[in-house]
Image 1 (tube, helix red, strand yellow):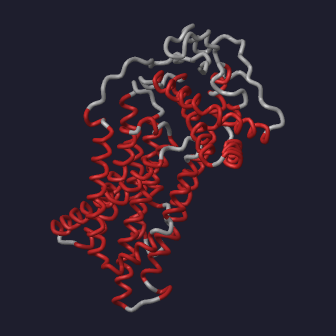
Image 2 (cartoon, helix red, strand yellow; image 1 turned 60 degrees about the vertical axis):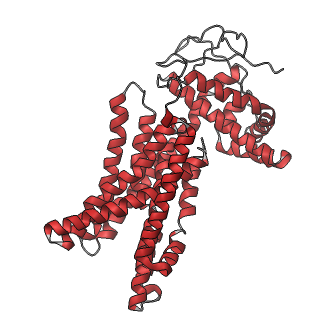
Image 3 (spheres, helix red, strand yellow; image 1 turned 180 degrees about the vertical axis):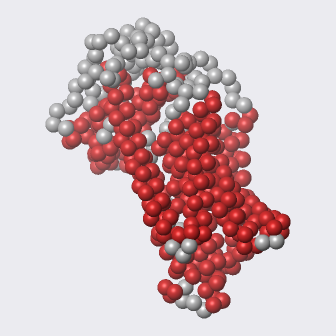
Length: 446
């Protein structure tokens, strides 16, 4: 029978453990999954019929073939950003499906209705189109896309822990939305070329493809990422700060609407308005947000290196593992070693070990800062159990990665300074047996 190391309990903060009550009926897994699948399936069928009606079968197929080209690159980019603590694929599939089906359906129906109503009320079809593109469309489309981020934030809370998670969910949702919208625009452009007989680079299809797929495939993701950042910051905020947790996503949503409105209204700035807005606003904004997300990812790795040594001291992790798990290169080497020597199943186990350890570091970071949720102890115990079950296959791979990336394994030293947040209880009752005193970890000691 395996002997468990001492079990560290909750650091001083605003949350503890406790018994969680039974979930409400709407929180049950089969209810959530059944409702999501039904909603997205119906939305997909309706949006498919609407787009095909507007473009024709041939235009739909051409638009589909061209619109799908940037999707793998965008999804791969967001997945790369999420490599430190990769979320489950089902969240990304839901986000993409919501953007491509539900959000696109809401946008098409609401934008069309609002534009027709304004044209009827003002007897100015041109003004209605301009108002619809610059005011109605940004509000409707960004709200529809933000709904996916909100649903993941509420119902997959354990997978939504910070800014990177918000960026990834928002970006994949917007990628799905842009995919459907591009089918519509490219299919319509192809129909126009069919009627006019235009072919080649002078065609409307080529011009639409260049503007939407080549120059600005990141436009919709860039807008919605602002909403995701708002939700991500809210996820890092203590549960006691209710107003801040509500206002931050709303501020992000308003910024997304404003950037979207400026982009849609660029044509009103003259013949070169599009290029002016693109060069002076969109590209710098894209570069700034890219820097922010990459910086956040590096900060996450630093958090892993700072928070995990306490678990190495108590025996839950190997001495070198905090260093290895805080380096993307070392983590990759560990997976490659496991795949080469033991096969793909072992490599997947090592990958899961890395993901659970990262989640554990983030959980403890929130707890040490007084931002832990009410289920801190339960979640910490679950993650430690997952790590302990995979230790026999993961530790050799991680030890190899440590030897390959540093000449000397970094030692783990128990700090001998006064605690910054106190000691844990002397003993932890439960299936792990009695535990010795929990050594305090001071991450600020050099």
